[in-house]
Amino acid sequence: MEIAGRTAVVTGAAGGIGAAMARELLERGATVVLGDLDADRLAVTAADLAIEFADRVHQWAGDVTTDEGVAALLAAAPGPVDVFVANAGIFRGFGLEATAEEWAASWQVNVMGHVAAAKALVPTWTERGSADRRPGPGTPAGGAFVSVASAAGLLTQLGSPTYSTTKHAAVGFAEWLAATYGDLGVQVTCVCPMGVRTPMLEMGETADDPDARLGQKSVTSAGEPVDPREVAVVALDAVEAGRFLALPHPDVDRMQQQKAADRDRWINGMQRFRHSLD
Image (cartoon, rainbow, N blue to C red; front, side, top):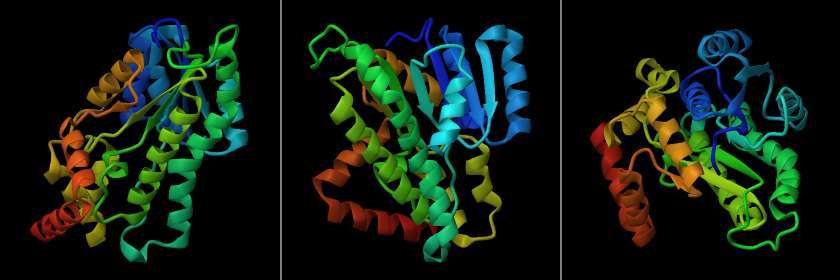
């Protein structure tokens, strides 16, 4: 799918990867709706982008993880939505001491926000993509769904069982979506970076919880953190090329292949890696 002239929605767009994704979409010629729960930060980001991109910038503040919230977010778009970037995510809950509330919040934001968006958009996109055409490989995309997951969803995340588990689920949902609707007009791209220089990563450096610090150290030790803009470029290049997997850190591909080839050896290696960080 070509980005130019499209209408896109980005969740978690007040900062970090979401804000970078919004800017990259705008620079490629899209009209963008920024969504976020933090109304104050969102307004600042949207105002900054509007200086350069004027009336192609729109915003909506609220909960983007529910059916009702997604419906309101989509209604803020100036026309039919062509690209949805499910970026909103949280890194909360560490070790086996993670609370039921932290598990529930992680599941709601990191997974169900993607599900709610797909439920709202996929029926329309399949109609667009398949209209007057025989469904099958090569069917023109009626819409593009971009799932911002994590390398944790392909590998694992030391320190945080909530993050690792829900990011695995996000990758699984994206794969299911692509397998079920990818030849019916829905293009799916799953973005799986390792460390990205965002406030979420910085939180681990000053955390009191040793599991939180372990999570942060495991990410920064595994590979050099990248700028959010690099993630956005790799992700949207994948969208325009029609690729499912977008890996801002190329080493992740090698790591997931090693994991698949010999899972026991890979787990032993992760245990040694954890001891080295301790």
